[in-house]
Image 1 (cartoon, rainbow, N blue to C red):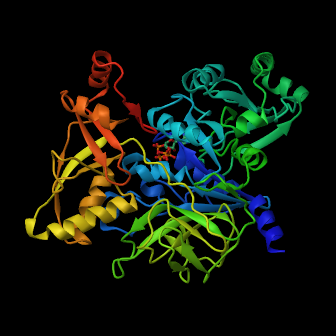
Image 2: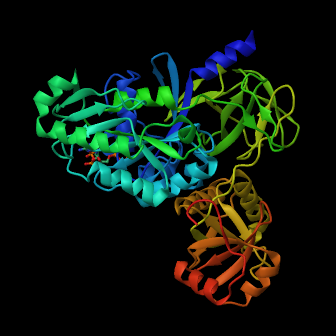
Length: 531
Ligand code: G4P
């Protein structure tokens, strides 16, 4: 009975994230998706920047001071009998390891591109994480209401630069800037219904979408229609039709053209997500055995958040449910320690809104409070034991030496650094040369350092000094090569405390190339993403 219910609930869910570069329109798209799905009554109430910001977090002083959100919110969108869980990937200044880790908790991603800019740096980094995990990617080319690039040129860029085969499921009529509408190709490439775009002023309401058949469309759009037809024919010739197997393997990507701001094409994106993106499936444990969704409860911590409630110093763990039915009050087992974990105060967090959650199913995200004993990557379960493989650590690009300001508080310093390492706030590296007193902190985004500084002072009462190091990339190496690298200039070998991995830090990619050229054969393997 329960197994059937869990299977049905899991089947209704789509858990995804949006990967994009700042300013491509992620906040706008989030609002538009929620608006279209009628999850909120008007755009602007969910998510945004500046005065459009509807979700602010008062969880940390620092967040308030900077006016940014360090917390990634999960947004639940009910749509057409489905439950869409949109996990936020923090970007902008708060780009950090958390941004990458969120991608370990989703089943699909929307790659959002600005039609005038195409693939940009942050999108590429996030895409690499999707690729490594074989996460299916749906591409949404945004801002089609403005002047931008040729659609075929954009598809070509996607294919050439990242080797992802684009398979359009709609096609624009009219050039970017003089956008007339889209032809819906459907997944079989033969749908061909025309959706005409009517500009609405302001953009706060849904653009009017008028549907017409080919004949009416040809009359309405003239030359623009003909050109679109020629391009669609070309797509057919080059075999750009949707292909389920390669999409699910992360090798091809359905592409849609639209505009989030006037809400055009957003419904098509929701439908594509519901129709094509996979529902939560079984998850492999560390030995490779699959735990089916209908098995007893299991989930993995993909993010920790500290300091949300100052009075209680609480620590919240965000858990993606993998299997079973979650019920508040359940006592779970913490796989790492074998200890029980009570879930009396489990919540769902949407931005700064916290609501108590009673039940959750595979694909959902729950937030466990009083979770100081948990770390990123930890498994919680009920029934037969399961341990999920750790979430990989990502290639850091910022490095700084940490020292206790007050030598008398060295013990607190050590404890704090160890705790932040375990939580995955930063990666902690050390070497005999630098000594234990001066660990090197490594981060994907510089904001992680500020979080460390803040928490070391406030929470562990061990204020620190940070001295930035002049390295920008890290590579994995071996013990044998570490000695050889040690003798070279412009690099330094350190050991990552969490897993003992030896990392060589290098000033920049030119220095790396010189080392590789002059010392061929040295092991210097890229780490995941950004490396
Ligand atoms: P982000 O979260 O990815 O950083 O992007 P955001 O949604 O904040 O959008 C960045 C800018 O792009 C915003 O303009 C937004 O209005 C605009 N934008 C997003 N989607 C579209 C679209 O489909 N068409 C057009 N024409 N513009 C779009 P801004 O001027 O930077 O901010 P604001 O003053 O509008 O808030």
